[in-house]
Length: 456
Ligand code: FAD
Image (cartoon, rainbow, N blue to C red; front, top):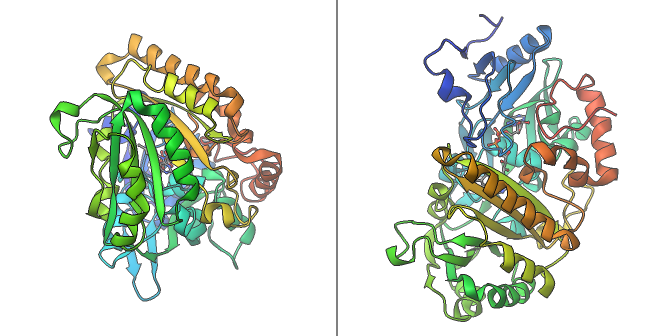
């Protein structure tokens, strides 16, 4: 098979690399595309889009391949695969980075930190830049520097007709608005340009763990602590078991526990002051907060969510951490049967909430906390485990019903019963506006293997 004007690698079912090339982060996803087009650059992506349109092929677009729903790969059609386009070019004087559409956050942190710079990215290094950015982008730096999309300055996009356009505040501003939250609906983004900020390279960061029995007390304390926290302090709460990482004493491994992971985007001494009360609360099992290279901290969770394990997620934005919501969380968080399953609460607010709400297509700016419930099991544990972890995640979400804010982070939506929640992710007003931009740039909905916005 050949694609006119394409110089990358074409991988079909008879190719030795086919099975690795079609695998995504979530090992429960098992799809068989007819063709994987590994692009070397923008011209290849444009050739692949034209080929797909010309042949009426189902089309999936792959950045980091991390989306839990596995939308980066489709059955029978073509995967426009950017995973070999991972270059990151930093301009330290302008404080910007040019990032290719297949880069991972570990690539970005590595290159930007060489200059003492960073931008808001995901909390796991092997997550893709493209999918995360296009959905909004939440992470430890967001309260100080905004969402990832608040730092996006421009994007190069191959649109559904195969043309290459630039989107920024001044060029195709409607497309630029939609790309900042509207997901992969509007074309293949081959390059992103981000604003960078001075961060570290050494920051005060790390988790404090308490025993699961202390969950209610810790969360009640945390609610008030987080509400008063300076913008520099980003925190994520993880409820599950202590991951078996070498930095954690072996006797604690797999013990049910609640952790508050902290990262202070400012001077280490100021960070010490900001987290002092948290570290003094109750009786921690272990306190790993210390001056740490930011890039190393960002990679600290990588081995707790490995490629190829099986995953099922449920998520929602929360109205707050009321005592009643905390009771539900404490009741359900440790009821999974797999020790790898966990739930995570992200603390939003700060710069995220202060940005004008219609400045981008990200819809959950007024929410202080969201939760993602992550069922995890090993490939050899399929069957009963799959059903058990899936049921746990669903029950947990159901129990949170009266604490749901009515919105959800689009990048945390899974497949099956979550596909109908795309409107919930955006709300009616933003969804309608996205649908209008979709109608202009992709009227035939060629890019629909995603959290789909229908042209309207
Ligand atoms: P892929 O699976 O490659 O793609 C997902 C979809 O994005 C595709 O179907 C396509 O529609 C679109 N897409 C991908 N690349 C392109 C492109 N170049 N051009 C156009 N469209 C494209 N999110 C956060 O915000 N913060 C976090 O801290 C965070 N942590 C996570 C941790 C883990 C372990 C995981 C699995 C996910 C996490 N996420 C987080 C969610 C993450 O944002 C999504 O999974 C996101 O889709 C990952 O991007 P990707 O490029 O790897 O996705």
